[in-house]
Image (cartoon, rainbow, N blue to C red; front, top):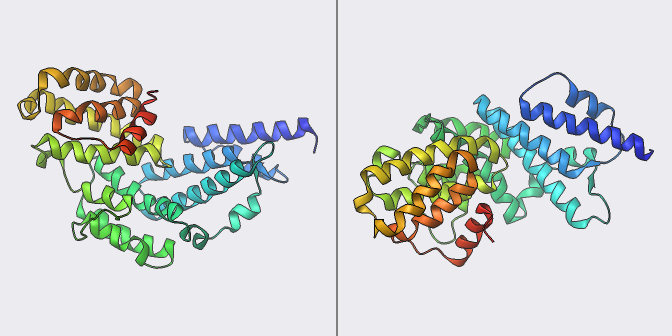
Length: 292
């Protein structure tokens, strides 16, 4: 394959990415994929799979979303391996990627958690979109069992979402995400509880493969909640004169800066609710906020 031919085929996949991200279906993805021969650009294919996953979340079809989420996770894993081992450009073989199995992911704790993030994303989506109910948990059980080969993988996480699982220091992070979703805004009269929930939500969305789809819901969710804190619960904050200006600045920046401002909000609100961020949490939040 000549360099010019490879370049045009790559452009076709970039156009396919734009098609998926825009939510259109005019055949670019299928035609450009059919025109490929040999390995594909790892990053582009991963981005396409992630965009499909985000679209599936908004379609609200749980089985379709889980399938798309697993596919996005497999693509992300293939891209990560390719990029880490590359000598020049990172490429992946679509046949190998398509033949990857879930069992491959589950042997690695990092990627096992990435798979668990898929049902966690669905739960987060329903919380942020205002469609949360215990029925969502029940509706997740069968599609998870079918996609993962058994009910065991997601069962404890779904128990955490229902308040039936005791969290501890070794609990996988997706379980913690599921557990905090039971705290609705109406129940959060204490800013400390809101802070703990929102800190976990920001961390989850920041590393989710459906980040874009969830970020556009997280921003107004945080903005409403923390405006309420500033207007009605300020007296419950520590030293509000000192800490509220930074919180207000982050809240105002949310619509424009998204997760960057959300991470700054969590950092700014920590002392106001008596939270001492660990070094790892602070480093992660500063990375999301793009703070040196």
